[in-house]
Each structure stands twice: as C-alpha cells, then as structure tokens.
Amino acid sequence: MALIEGLFPPSRENYELLLQCWQIGYPVIGSMQWIIKWYGMGKTSVSSIFNIPGRLAWMTMECPGFLTLLYVMNTLPQKAGIDDLPWQNRVLGGLFVIHYSYRAVLFPLIQPSMSPIHVGVWALAIGFQLCNALCISSWLSAYGPTTAEAWSSVSSIPQFILGIGIFYLGLSSNFFHDEELREIRRREQKRQERIRQQSGDKTGSAASVEKHYQIPQAGLFRYMLYPHYLSEWVEWFGFYMAAGWGCAPARAFLVNEIFSMLPRAVNGKKWYIERFGEEKIGKKWAVIPGIW
Image (cartoon, rainbow, N blue to C red; front, side, top):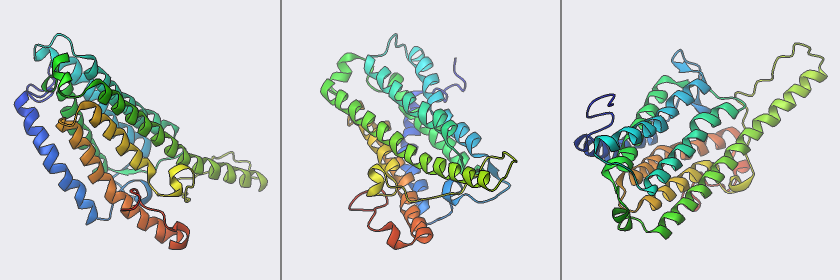
C-alpha cells in the first residue's frame, strides 16, 4: 500500500526526477557551508529557543532513512510486478540498515552527552535522509538490476565482495574513532565525579560534560581531526563499488556526503586551532591527508 501514490514509494518518473534533483541540488546546498559558518549542532551549538534536545533530534532526523528504505523495499517490488529480488539487492539494503542501526539508534544512546540541535539543521537532515533513502531503495527495489543476468553486467561477484569488504572496513573505523571521542567525555566525567567526591559534595548529581573537548590522539586522529568522516566516506565508496559504477543513487550519496561533511571538517579545524592553538594542532589535516 502506497503512503503517497506515485511518491512514497516513487513511480519511475518521480524517481528519475528526484534522483536528478538529488544529484544537482544537494551539492549546492552542502556547498553553502563554505560561506555560512554557522552550524547549529555539535561544537558550534548555541542556546536557542529553536533547539531540540540532542538525542531526540538525532534519532528523529536519522531514523527516517533506513525506515524509508525498509518500507520501499517491502512495497515497490510488488507494485512493479517483481516477485523476488536478487540476493545482491537484499545484501545492499542490509548494509544500509546496518549502518543506520548504529548511526541512528545505537550512536545517540551510547553517547555520554549530546549538544542540542537547531530545528533548521534537524529539518535539513531529514530532507537528506528521505531523498537519499528514496533514491537508493527505489534503485534496489525496481529501477536498478532486478535479475541475476542484470547484475552480471553491473557488478561482478569479486567486485561486489570487495566493495562489501571496504564497506565493513569503513564501518569498523567509523565506530573506533567515534568511540575515541566518547572516551574523552567518559574520562572527563569520571574526573569531575572524583573532584566532586573529594570536595565532599553529597548531592549525587552527575557531572556535566556537554561542552568538554580535547584533541583526540588514537588511530587516525594522530594524522587528522575528522577520521570518522573519512571512515564514513570509505563505507559508502565500498557500497558504491559493490552496487556497480553505474549506480547513480550510490554515487550521489557518496558525493553528497563529501559536499556536506568536507566544509564542516575544514571549518572544524579552524575551530580547533582557535580553541587549542596552532602549535597543539600541529600538522594534522582536517580530513583528507595531503589535501585538507
């Protein structure tokens, strides 16, 4: 049953129109961050009546992506007259769900703290998730290869397996570097709790680490400030490789992630320098060794 006939899930005509807008429009939106330095979440989050609590905002803006993919992959094949999808389609859909099960659900739950997120950033993130998920799920469900013969001309088995391996390499690196950032806040929380106990504070209130930042050093943090961004790009490059170099939705997803996250990393390096000093940042890159 379609939630919105012709749009959710999309007809082929609407899919092609949405994909064209996704490929052209979002890089323009992402590039605006080179001009507009404000970004109402994370390090640059400030008090505002338009803020949404961090965990709630994160989950509600990230979950629509994988929920949309699951919905479309369970409805569109039947509408398109497809009885069963090849295993490659299901594997790629599963990879998408695995990533966002961590990113949208587990990630906010295990964070020691999360800064508020401005409703404008929240709304743009929802738009990103819906456009991306509709394009990828439509391709996987009906408008990409839907037979074994079609897959043989799109992505060979060795290429598909190598792409999956690259995806999991990026996913594990993403989790590792996220965990290093979490550990910084855990250590600070424990430090503050020890100080409170030594001072005789019996209130039992938890220490706040909402705005505590350090320069992380583990793993790729020794060379760059945003290896978790680079790790996510590696993930989706692997996904794109597995789907085949002609998969426009996967290519657009990777490109749009870079256009969205690269300016944040470059501006974030400036933030680190302003906060800690250039001598402490040293020769670390923002996110791409040898370039930025």
